[in-house]
Length: 161
Length: 279
Ligand SMILES: Cc1cc2nc3c(=O)[nH]c(=O)nc-3n(C[C@H](O)[C@H](O)[C@H](O)COP(=O)(O)OP(=O)(O)OC[C@H]3O[C@@H](n4cnc5c(N)ncnc54)[C@H](O)[C@@H]3O)c2cc1C
Ligand code: FES
Ligand code: FES
Image 1 (cartoon, chains in turn cyan, red):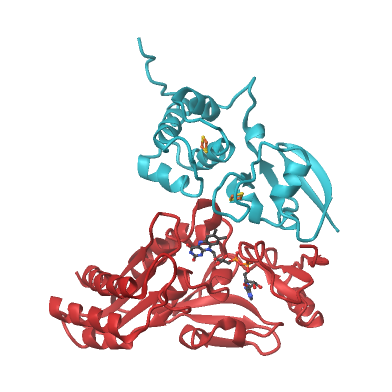
Image 2 (tube, rainbow over the protein chains, first blue to last red; image 1 turned 90 degrees about the horizontal axis):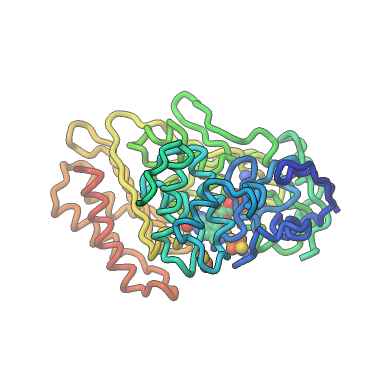
């Protein structure tokens, strides 16, 4: 077994894990079921989290390799009562259908907007290229990221009459 | 799972090499982990995490640029040197690898060592006459041409650790092009083509044409290079070079691409890449 310390959504968390345990399994065991398991092999992005500010597919990260790291999951970004502007934009834009991809999508959007506050569509597509959505067709997801960017930059659109 | 008993986190290269030597054959280098997370080599019970031994970033070695093994593909894509040298070839190719989260995880060393048919960087580094630097029981520097003559798993011993890949700096005017052909943005490559042309005036003094994803290992196509070198290539030269590239090798087939389709892809894309590099 390996002792690991993570800062999980701002809280220091110590845990003991198997030497080949994956971060996704550790996080879900710790109750973080907002991190979803889709493919389990790095292709769908539903397990995406931010590890030290960078988007990773947690199903193919060894937990022991993340030791000492800061992890942000969708629930750490915001909650139903107190959502982050990116999460609100997803709801408002109709970018959430079944919702399985959404935790990963909002984190991919967060990783992008932290570095590129005013992305164009190409940049958004590149930033979301590891996150699959089987429902929306992506159009509204891209709209949501654009509108989140405007909100975060304080350039909210004039609301429709 | 459950086969792995030990997870080692050395802080120094020497320490990593010592562990690999001591647990001969039972210890395996862990870099980005994107491949090891899915399958472990047989007989391994120890993972040696090399992410904390200072093997990240680029170093200027005078006439070459050293890319340290644990540099992630995303870091490589973002570095000013990879955007500048060889017309931005390294950055362009790095951005074609897998997806955003995976580019944050996959390391340059892991991509070059665990060469899968679809791996994107090996062909590019081969076209650039890169050399791989290996530490271990017998430290050595191996040109990628030799490194990829057979699968690296046959030439790397259990105690070996790749520390960096060295890319010669461009001399004179050098132009390049790269394409990855896949079904979607995040699909494995069905073909990658890298063309690098070293020019004097408008004449091509030296040329690399490297293909990936058409054979188990990346390959250079000397027959195509020959049609271009020593000339100011015309459109006909490029068409001839591309036809020879398509003719000389027996492409692999898989459920996405038949042999004939791959040959067709080679014929079209080698021509386009030559055209782009030499335009
Ligand atoms: C879903 C998915 C899609 C992918 N798509 C692409 C793609 O489109 N293009 C592409 O190029 N790649 C792609 N990859 C990545 C590729 O298949 C490998 O997983 C990756 O290159 C391995 O790099 P790593 O750093 O994660 O290595 P690891 O998984 O850590 O290691 C892989 C192997 O290499 C050895 N190794 C690693 N580093 C060293 C070193 N420095 N010295 C000695 N031995 C070493 C390890 O011991 C191990 O045997 C994809 C991977 C996944 C999971
Ligand atoms: S569950 Fe990790 S990428 Fe699909
Ligand atoms: S909303 Fe269902 S997968 Fe995206």
